[in-house]
Length: 392
Ligand SMILES: *Cc1c(COP(=O)(O)O)cnc(C)c1O
Image 1 (cartoon, rainbow, N blue to C red):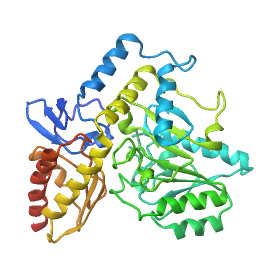
Image 2: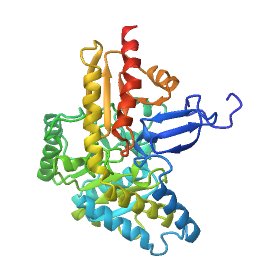
Image 3: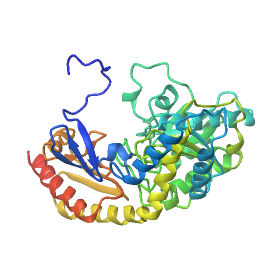
Image 4: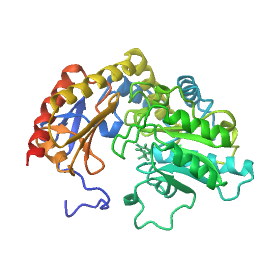
């Protein structure tokens, strides 16, 4: 590895996978692993899904790319379906989560111009993650992603997550606010689930002040939490919603959805992307939606997620050092009372893929196709690892 020609921005675990099937991965030595991370909430349909593979190969043999200089029918179709599922009006396609959020931030800037605000500010949350471009890292509520990259984009004011009084307070102080940007459940921040009513309360404040409510559903969207989009648990409609991760099941695609006035802010030339919304990515997006629907996988995620959560609550009941086990659909966090990054390697040794994002919290994001038996296997492997780690 010391002779690698890759830049040093990742610290990969010492394993490399050569193929996969469903929730299983196989490394280059032929060892099998249970994947409870799904490439960080990307492969909701699991690995090598036949419908995804078929969509890729079919479209690749017909047409991959033409550019947005021309109309793209598959892009129109995917936009229509996403709008139908989300009750949003219009879509801009990029290639990643960060790009989807960049588009959202640019919409907020255009919204500001309409309101006559020259130095617009967006309210963001502590513990949030919105991406690694200059604007999205500036929006992110984690200093680690910002260090060394100053000066930041000066457009954000940060408040504590799940604190509606803080939002009201900042509204009273700052007349330059034009939008609120927020994850419905914080992913990288440690699977932080706000109290019921938090999103509804944000909606109300945004309506009072004519701010855009912008939900980053890049990790929570496409069924992950047991609804198509996490805001649907509360029946809240944002003005802007961003998607990426699971939308292409691994084929890069990002989307910025908008509704009402916010959907009409871009005009020809005001934003764009060379690859964004190309026929290949869009045909895969359509196949993903069709497969989620045909197999009732959103309901399965809700059901299996509940099962997994209860199974862990039971298997770890009374274990001292377990602070909280929380989850929404197939998005689970197990918070311990001490830093637990080393659990990732210990689980890997037992052929289970998990993740620790913030110091004390294990994050599980199994594919939505995970069966009850596979849930039991995840619990069966991880429980003793956590127990013995906490006894040390
Ligand atoms: C992953 C993620 C992003 C960034 O997506 P990229 O595709 O890595 O740019 C943004 N927001 C949230 C909530 C995410 O989970």
